[in-house]
Picture 1 (cartoon, rainbow, N blue to C red):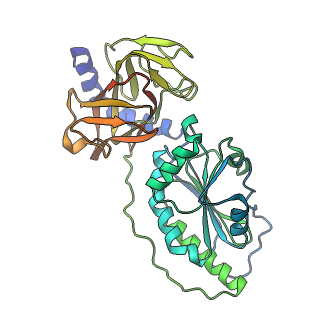
Picture 2 (picture 1 turned 180 degrees about the horizontal axis):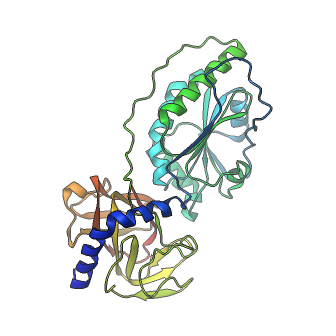
Picture 3 (picture 1 turned 30 degrees about the horizontal axis):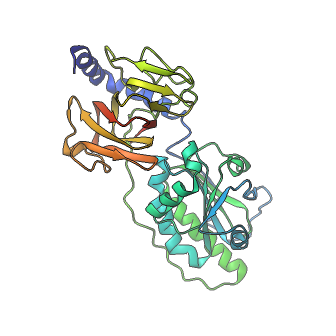
Length: 369
């Protein structure tokens, strides 16, 4: 690192805790949120007045059906307790919820629970059914997944967040609403109560099991860098690109080496084309520089490339190596989606450099944990 970048790193370490507060504020503006819940009291199985509840809307504008078919899904929904999971496969917040959702599917599907994954894409490549198929196979998803490519079902639910879970009772009334990660035990207890409610209403014998799925929950860093968008449209009203050349919609820009780096900002180096949702490397090689605060760093990319990861000017140490690092400090990106490049036990501030080999490589976001 040159002296200016070293100075920036030292300054960043000093102010990390203070600016971390600002990072949390900015994080709250993102469409991916950590946790928020609305639910009705289901502790009592006495007669419930449902006149004030909304019914779950119909699934509309669906481009593809995976693990099901339109008529089959309509019949399955009738009389079931339905958990509608609005997600998209490159969203790290969504991915962290999937072990719980697939476990609930295994545990409760024969008792009357139906899980419907509503895949509402954030990026264009997430509309491709083949990409979504690879994702559901990777995460062991056997329940129905519908591709809401035009966000029509998203709008029908009046949703604004990834991920979001709605649970409808056997009569179709939405009884539970949770935004983001977390509250897994609470969510499962609601599933159990609504299944019990259903069994009583339909006169069905049900084996009672009050035990809850036991999976270690991801612990977020309190102060962390907010999600950083490489697309000029997605980054609108966010001061995240540190390079003096800035965003220039539709143009290929030769981004120069930064004289200094600021915390929570990224700096591309080389020739990059500006798209509304991403940047594409036009030169054969390029670099991305970032001063961040977190314990986990992920990138969302498309097109093949070799990435060399340097941390604080040195090859990536093993104790910081992400789950997708396969060869020392190298990572090979191929399929479009999310890749974990930094994974550590504690949150701290570091200067990261990603050296890219691969013309045509596209990067959409940095996300942090």
